[in-house]
Amino acid sequence: MSQRRVVITGMGTVNPLGHDVETMWAAMLACKSGVAPIELFDASTYPTTFAGQVANYDMAAQVPDAQRHAHAGRQCRFALGAALQAWRQSGLGVYDLDKSRLGIYLGGGEGSIDNDAATSLMIDAWADNRIDTRRWAQLAFSRHQLYREVEQEANMVVAHLAAEFGALGPAINVLTACAASTQALGEAMMLIRDGDVDVMISGGAHSMIHPFGVSGFDLLKALSTRNDDVQGASRPFDATRDGFVLAEGASILILEEYEQALARNAPMLAEIVGYGSSADAYRITDQDPAGAGAVAAMAAAFRDAGLGPADIDYISAHGTGTRQNDVTETRAVKAAFGQLASRVPISSIKSMVGHLVAAAGATELITCILAIRDQVLPPTINLHRPDPHCDLDYVPNAPRKASVDVCMSNSFGFGGQNSTLVIRRVK
Image (cartoon, rainbow, N blue to C red; front, side, top):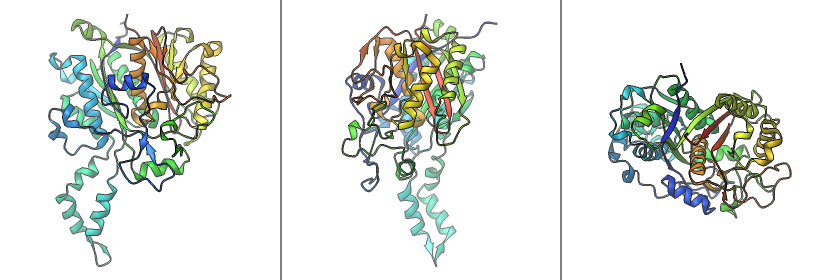
């Protein structure tokens, strides 16, 4: 039995550079940054006072029955908008789809903790030097605090999307940090390949721009503290880089079995042909400096696709802008591509959009699809003083016209999870 092919028939995004794919893409080709001072809470006393925030987003403008999701967390609101964009582009809304053959697989992160509401609740329930639990429960239900707490669960995005689209197939969430949405897309593709489903809604959503998220990464010394130059703060592969820029958003793609997409004349944006995954098994806070896990993920994706280094026209880098990641990723690409490494253009869109954490890989895959469509590579901006240890072609500071048919997208998660996807123009 031949292996079923999997194509992408829709894509959508909500992120700091735009509330839809084309707005984001235009901003990237104009080398714009979506980084700005934090407005979601008072970060003036934090080491890092900026992030990539989604501004002026109105879920009701994109989600017809927005009231149905009134209690949805911030990351879920983004995902609903992105998923409906992708669904509309796919044309599946007018197709008689067996909903038991429709599944969801996301890389979904935790939502923001409502610190103000929780603190207020505690104060109001305090009596006789202790928490009055009966009063606490009364206040919690009266203020719908229960909804706020439930919405922090990472699988709530999947639950909301399943309800919105009536998806009766597998409903899965994975949170492997920065590799989450790439892993979700790869494993969603395999479910279609294996015949378990015909369509998967897949991608990622995350929002961590809150006191807990920012302070945690600051304590790890992972964030840039370039507070006097926030739009220049995300600078992957630059010698002056000092950490990543935390961002939020969602990107969703519709994956579909090729024959079904062909039969209904669906827009086939790209074909997923390879997926690889590995673990560093090194340390929970660091990558293996040799990049062995990253090399293994790329090698596995090559094998799965039946392709080799010479077939890749562009690499979407993980490219966080941390001191360690960029050097390690450079070493890994050199090891995986050998003598061809210097000839393959590689860029990091995190230089413009920031690090979307669980949503990063799906957003980067969308830019690979656009690179194939428009034959242009997105740039790595803020790359003015190349690190001598990062000596590949990172498409610095300006988009580049190129012949692009096959792309590789890398995601290397905190804790040593590595995932790689290979896509190509549909033949």
